[in-house]
Image (cartoon, each protein chain N blue to C red):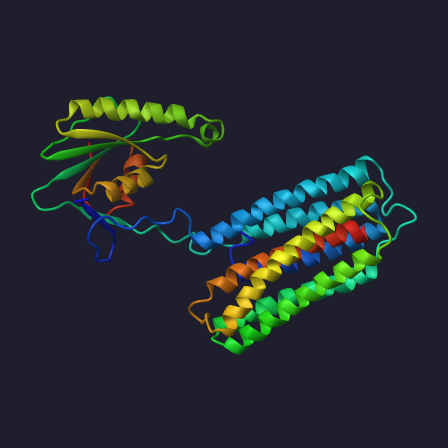
Length: 184
Length: 201
């Protein structure tokens, strides 16, 4: 949905829509009170539908892909694992590994306060995996795998990414970065 | 931080700058959040209005009082027109027309001032006061709350106009006009709702 107050031009268009809606409501209310109520409901729904249809500038643009590296002599691997992953096998030649587990939560969980539980799950997974890998540290990521990776790259940087998860999970990471991504 | 990451095709050393989670700039987002809180404030006053008029069944306006519908209509026309001049001002500066911006802002300010003065005069002649029942209380609360917002909008407009005459805005830099314009249109939208519910329906 497009924010009707996103810019002055949008706010002005919204004002014009409100004027038209007000005229319709007043006209209908003079004919019959309940017709006025129906017109008010229709106007609100109509404005909501219009805003829903309006394209949000830049919303359909693909997010820019991130690239990353570490200084010479350092080789850092970002291990991205889905919550609940018990073990990961990969050729670990890295000097350092950052284990990132996104706190994946459904919309229902996000609305009902279940995010804390999902973060706790993600933290358990990350710490368990990090404990089995030399020079590894654990980190809980955002609720979207791509965002979790983006945050970790911005904070730590990495030379390659290893992903443990299903195809969709792997693709959501691969689509956001330009550095090598392999599957564990 | 030794490591660095950067957006594709951009030469950058060190960690990338934090980016906005939203595509809206912080200034516009701040104004949006402010207006959202304002809508909630107006919403509480409208709740009181509907409670008095619909739930309680108070006659509107309560006899023997009358509302100056036609004066308010003229005032509404003035305020709506001021939004058009505000829009014209911003469109002008977007095209680099500084004098269009100055004229637009000045006209908007003068029309807003006219609206506020007319409302004050209307208050003095209306024939009832805040203590004359729930109808009068809600009338003054709703229109007064809006009047306060017009006053705030006028203050913003005054500074925008002064800055415009000092040459602070250009085709590339006019964010201050954009933000003030959003607020002014919001004040207009709220007046249309207030006028429709209090005076017309």
